[in-house]
Image 1 (cartoon, rainbow, N blue to C red):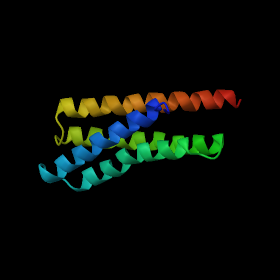
Image 2: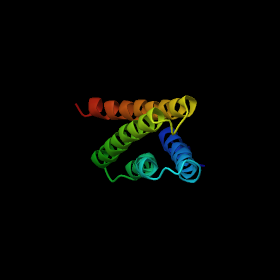
Image 3: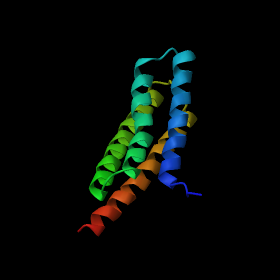
Image 4: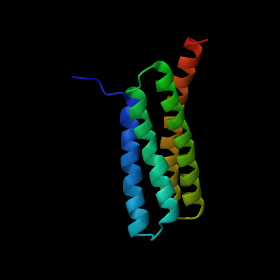
Length: 119
């Protein structure tokens, strides 16, 4: 049985949270514009991690991981904005921000390792 990649699992679990949050924002808060942006960036993280894992080379892997990092930064922004405009409670927003920061640390660490190996 293949071992699950930690980043792969965390980015997938995060995407599930984002999908559920966006459904809530649409149905309960009637918020459509910001949640659509959040949905795109928040689910793109895991999609790019998956593409990185299936990359044809280390350069391809690094490039997709860099996109995942940028999407995580964008998601962090949308969560901050939704929190600041009271679409999310402080607890909801902080929990999501903690998750984005964890993803950023993991991705950043992998990027740093690749860069140091190629220096």
